[in-house]
Length: 112
Image (tube, rainbow, N blue to C red):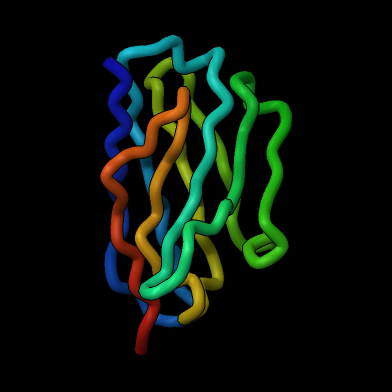
């Protein structure tokens, strides 16, 4: 059974940083394209970033380009999202996605 468990969210001030983690199980992680998506209050789901299985190819939404970095540790079946220079508009529940599944999400709140 595919399982994705996110962690690392929290409350941070504008300009701050957070690193999200997503531990995957139930499939061959190193072969899977993995993504981060987010959903802000009252809005639809927004794609944030993806990584190919080997991590060689990554892409970012324009809204986070230059501030967020996706990475993965295939030995640990873990996907990461380093978020720097956070803005209030980054407030959302962040989910990792892979193999057609989505985790339960982790809340990120950017506020002073």
